[in-house]
Length: 393
Image (cartoon, rainbow, N blue to C red; front, side, top):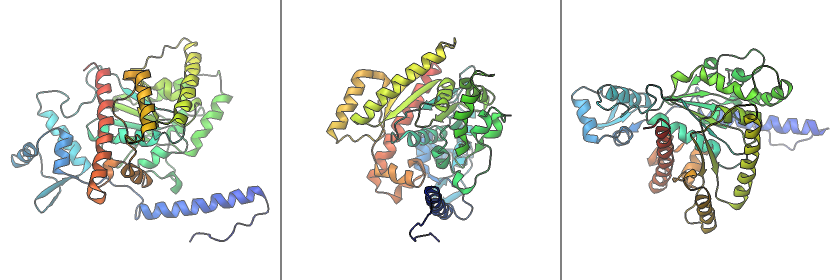
């Protein structure tokens, strides 16, 4: 039961401790109810129409594959309609790729000497939809056949929560901190877990990750440069993935910088408001200064793309559209053409720590869902195209 009585405390520390205790109790109770009975998220099933769209085939082609036995029937068939699990979609991709004459048609990931793509989402302005954009990119890429690793560099663990791990419920597994710490770090492979979402793995964050900032200050100038720690950890698992998505904290500290060094590309999410524009200007200016310090050590940084992503876009809001037009005029093709819409469907899903890809369309107003889904699909498709261009395809 929740404590609802007035808080009485002798000292300020007692007061804040009681506040923290009540919040922890309420949050834990909510999460236990949300993820009962085993506190694990599960991915919904997808209709045959959705699966055909994801695979880039027609419904007729999909039915033919089942009838001739080239694809096994899905486990769930209701009233003659097929529904596919995430694992079944992934297996269908693998089977169709094996029989395809065009390499990469169903599994568009790395081939040959293709470089692992490491994309960092960064901005020190809270409310920029950074974590929401990160999870939607992760889910879009995984659904479209990319072997995806999510790395949560934010000690608050928003991306970790989106991936189904609730650190508030006493999660005690290894985290990205264990691979980055200065004292006896773990192999990166030990700090990665499979998620409930096929094709997506996660290196989770816990609050202890904030200790990396202090430890880096203490260990300055000793051993491997701090900004190399993440890139070296990723190198040990790079052959297992096509794409890495890094969600960095809303601050330009050591964690963000180590992600920036590891990244092959950078996306800066921002909402179209004058306040966010001013904040982003300061952020980019500070980033430039820090990058200069790293480059002064003789390191040459070369990102495949460094782009802005407009989030929470409202096409009907004239002042915000003026900001969007200004950004496109200033930076042209360095602003992602697609935008993440301001949508109640996305906001409602995020409250449940879900992406729009996990929501069942019938449980929302369909037009609202369709607009939100189309928006996230467009952003994901454009980023995927950037990845393909980095591989020179």
